[in-house]
Length: 560
Image 1 (cartoon, rainbow, N blue to C red):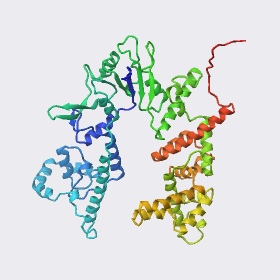
Image 2 (spheres, helix red, strand yellow; image 1 turned 180 degrees about the vertical axis):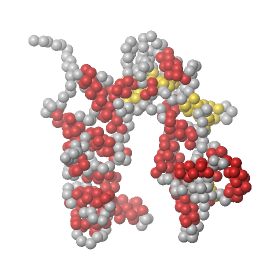
Image 3 (tube, rainbow, N blue to C red; image 1 turned 90 degrees about the vertical axis):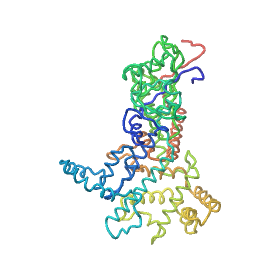
Image 4 (cartoon, helix red, strand yellow; image 1 turned 90 degrees about the horizontal axis):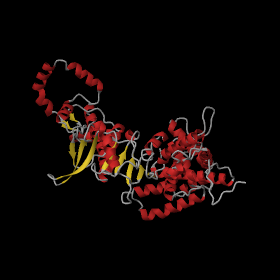
């Protein structure tokens, strides 16, 4: 846009300041006064690490063990000493903390005791990674606790190291600010106080990242006004706008300002609310402008992201219908590039019902071809399940159902497989049973590849042969969707209307798609969009598609 003689306004909803602060603190920085790092601190990196620590908590710390550094990453000597001096158990035990605070009411006697026993107490401490795994856990409970603590800490450390190897990006706002020229060339109109700025350090002879406060000529509450004036005057040609500055600020090509370049408004993050979207888009499209802005929306091909675009597109259509009697008006979705995401309408509901019906029936003519890689995954699952059933006594058809002593999750899974394999996929199940008896189970093929008894070159033709044979007897994309939807909690019963339940709508379906992995999300949402296009095409052919107020143009107009 800059090369074409325009200027840019980039719209975000969140700045990520809180996450960046947490990431900087975890990286060893524990105040808001400033600091220097070798590289950008990655907030996504620290978010993922925090989730890992929440999902895999360590057991209580045994007495005399120095806790892993990754639990207290802040490089503060006083905090580190105080945390390692705590030999009474886990540092996260609030009850023990309260008891200690009650015993510490006489600080003088406590200090005298510590001065006598300080040397012996420190000599008994041992780092967590020096605990011997050869300890006899049957000898004492303490040995078992020590070994279990080291194993758990090693597992968590392995996950955390794997996160570092991912090289996750820095905070998007910081990356944009620095890659587009830094604070000298980019006007930041946000509500955050701290940011990361990359600069060249002559004393070190390399670039460093400075973690510093935003500064302006005047007070802090006037920084956004200063930045707006810098952009409007043409001193800075790029402005980054967050939700905090999405109201009350004019960034259009006003006739009274020096910057007369056409605005290119790029939206990187869509809000849930259409009202907020209108507010932010309206910053660059206002009265007294010499040229209107160009709007660009960056939406990835991740299936779940269509959920957010669909919510905004519908609200924009409703807002236009309420204010101007035309659902295409008021920042109309089609003009903004969001028209294709307006799925939550009567055609979307009809398309969803048609799609789900074809999935529950495992229709032989799906609108999407099933990729072989995904067919292999589902076929391996089916073969593994049928192999387990065949190992039991009796007819395999009777063994498909759940047993009374199965867990609830097992009963749900077995019921689903019974419905699938004895219903629309009976022919597929019978074919696979015969193949398994002949030693052609895809699950067994995969096991032989993993244990090294077969190579990829020898096993691939066999797997391809079974995949093609399964596709010929009914293993298609609808069968894949049947199992994928079950994995995210959608079954024929839950998606249908009941006595106290309405049928599943488009928003709920798109929400459930968010629970799938990215390849499945993409395939599932694209499959739904194909059904939507089919329904719209049929409605247009039948003359039932309402396009709202339509503008009819011609070379001449004659009124009789």
